Structure formats: C-alpha cells, structure tokens
Image (tube, rainbow, N blue to C red; front, side):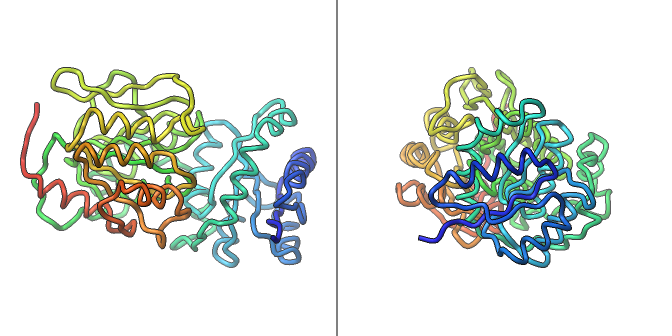
Length: 377
C-alpha cells in the first residue's frame, strides 16, 4: 500500500524536524518535504505532490491563513493546521477550518519538543484522517477574508447579526410555518469537519428554536472561541455549557473541551451536567456520554443529529436514543468531510433519515412542527 505523503510547513526548524521524525516513524506515511515559509512551500508542494500538508498558522513572508486560502482555491489539499494554544490561536484556527483545513493540532507554547512527542499519536491520527477526507473549495475565499480575525464575536456584533445589520439580513430560516414545542431538544454530535457543519445548521435555526446540546470533539482552549464565533453569527444564543445551568429554548450549549457534557432533569427543567469524568471512546468530550444522557432523560423529546467525523463515538448511544423514542438524522456521505461517525450510526440501526447537510436544519424544524405545541414553563 502506498504511503501517505506529507509536507511539513513551519518556520521553526525544531518543529519541522520533530514533525518529520514523528511522521517517518509510521509505517504508512512519509515526510516527503519541509518548508520554512509559504514561498518555499509552494515549490515543495508542486514538486512532491503531497497527500496531506501540516501548516503552521503563524508564518513569515505570508500569513498562514492567506496561504491556506490560496491553496484551497488553486490546489485543494487536505491540511492539518498546527496552532498555538492561545485565545488568538483558537480564533485563527477556527478561521482556518472555515477556509477548508481538515483539522488542527494545538502545539504547546513552552516545552515544544516534549509536547509534540506527547501529541505524536494525535498528530498521526489526524494526518491519516485528513488523507481520506473530502476536501472542497470554500465559497468566496479571498486572501483578504483569510486574514480577518474573529472580532465579530463580540456581543455588539452578535446583536447586529440577529437584528439584520452587518451587511443585510440574517441567514434565512426554514420557510415551513413552525409551531414550536419547548419540550424538544436537538442533540448534535460531530468530530472532524464538524465545526463548519454545526455552523451551517445553527445559522438556519430561528431564534425560538428548541434548545440545542452539542458535543464537538475539540480540545480545551478552543470551545469558548468556537461558541463565541457561532453566537456572533446565529439567531439563537450559543455558549459553552456550564454545570447546573438550565437548558433553554433559543439557546445552544457546546461541550467544553476537556470535560464531559450530559444533561439531567431537575424538577420540570433540563439542566447541563459538566464534569471531569474519564474519556469515553478516547474522547473528552464524548458524543457517547451526551447521547446516552439524552436517551435516558429526553426519550421521545430528543432529535438526534450525527454529523461528519471519524470513528464510532456516539453510534451505540444514538441507537439507545432511537430505542427510547428519539427521531435521529445522520449527515450523508457526499456532504461529510469524513463519513465515519454517521456511517457507524447508520450501521447500528440508530438513524431514521440520512440527509445532505444543507437539508438537516429544515428537517429538524419540520419534525418539531409535526410534534405540535407542548409548552413548558
């Protein structure tokens, strides 16, 4: 079997050396070239024709995001970003995912050598996943937009988007007349490619949509920026889940990186449970943990959605949701970056409908409408 050809682009000679060593230790991959900046990278990529590129966000001579935007426009190639674990690094990483990067690795700010070696398994797993990913040209990508920051994540920007400012009307909501049931809860699980898939669904939901609970595989330090970015773009309010807070309609709650997220009932209310319990299926947060609680607590009031991602996390628990009366949707293969988690959920018999990403929000709201009005204070 042909090895996965990888090109490493990083301005640090130490990081280039470490990543090359980690890659070349694997029997199924090979580092076929390195570059210290995007100008060198263009030549190396042209000569070596890699299957996957690892790309540092902060680069000399050309911003890493600008280079990524040009790459995706001219020569779409699976990219794993190498990011710094800072607030600014998190926002830049999210922008890279918008531009078409498949996934990212967060390198430590200090102790880079030991830190990268500790992350070796994670790095090579992400390269393997990226090699199989469906890479698409993002719409209207330009270098100017690539260098934009996540400043729109402020509360003022969020209010402007909801009111229809910032360049016209907010995203269109489904045209179907909706009668909302506040009992319903939308339960979403995702991994590789999930940040953009989640964004597309949430941007289509109306302000009075049912509550949404989300587990996206993401490390600590990134989910706060992810939630803030979504909050700036959507009609519903989006935040990291906090332990003990009430799950309310018109709000989406994202599992904090490095914690497990589930839901419980407190009297007549649903509440968030965020804790430091161990990884499940190697993940923390794990979709399995959230979906199992949804099966137990919500039963037929849950609408489950399995989005793009590698592996089987959440498939068995989604079957438990179906057995408890939930209605479940899986993203179809054509619109997935990686058709792993949805495929496993389908094979487990957990899914009622398999839909393109663009149709999922509408299907959710039509399902809610069909359920009729059952208000709960």
